[in-house]
Length: 274
Image (cartoon, rainbow, N blue to C red; front, side, top):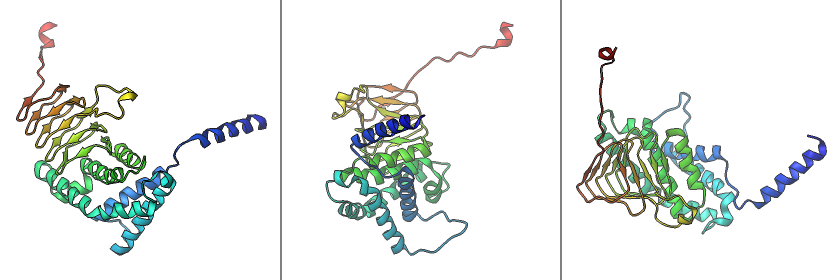
């Protein structure tokens, strides 16, 4: 580009940048806060070059980090960044208790799990749930965009996409998890287990539907097996039901239902046809 073309391009950028509604924290800072917070709650893994920092000092540093993340959004917060940070950490003990129940549920129902420590340190399902629960607290405090940055960070690491606005009960179990999608207005009860490839989505993706309930409700004690797709804001899966693999479901089912997909599989011998 010539100097004049460069200047014109820079001016176009400046005009566009001035029109953006939000300023956001950086993605690396968001990721560092998430990982530091989970590590603070569950200090199971150890660095090869450990350094000793007191729990109180780490807690204060996490407060500083969150305040920094909230700073670009300060004018859009319902309370100022310092008060919002304080409210978030006030809820940290209950978030911790919820995550312990999630880890215990995964450990109890996955035969491959050696224990809660393995679940917390290794399982992508637990990691995605942990980030969701942290982000969901911020959505309840009416923090815009930052919660979505957090769950998208987990999505990138795990392949599990949980919208921070979804409502999820206690003892949630995501096994394997790759390809799981849980939409913004989904409601999930307690003791629910879902497997890889499950989608809790919408039947209509029009922008005009943004303020309506678009995603299904899953009641307590439901199991949803791999690659099942459940769609629609009016769709309710009744408690204690089992949804089989590869099911496509757009209508409600009663409690204690078994829903399964049937297909015909034919096996032929190519040798006999030659």
